[in-house]
Length: 116
Length: 113
Image: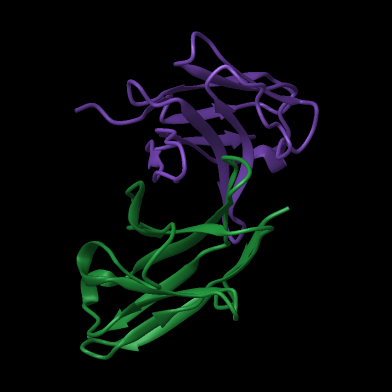
């Protein structure tokens, strides 16, 4: 079946511009996560959505970052007034939620963001 | 808040030798632990997980990991390394109270032919 998809695969933008990154999770997955991968920084947690619950935004690095998930499916990560330090690969993952356990995440291919 | 540490940025192992990639964690309550692998120019792939039960967990590609509660560790192991195992490996942890999953910084594994 279809995996997690992300678009665009690459995005080059000028400093100060806004960007939107899209994630289409696996159908039926209730949990959706955004991470940022920078050289030497590993995977940095940004935000996660679980069903209809309020999202956990504790990893968003500044108020320039926001995310929404419409209809419990597609998610958009928005970065306003981009800065050069925002350059990274942004990864989206989805998973099922099961009671009494934890299921693995399925990752998309990522969006490589370059801020010039 | 949960956290995970991978103390080695890079591990070099000769092909055919056993390998270990280290991971330690900190959570409140019981942990859920995961290992993922990222091959060059490919997305992250799930390897294995520990939820409860047997401390030795077996996963994909011949990898296994040992959960040690007293040492708060979840080291990844393989009895005989292959050159194709060369990749970036991530340990991740979730606590039992929410679905937030935190990853370590990753360990780059080089298998030398």
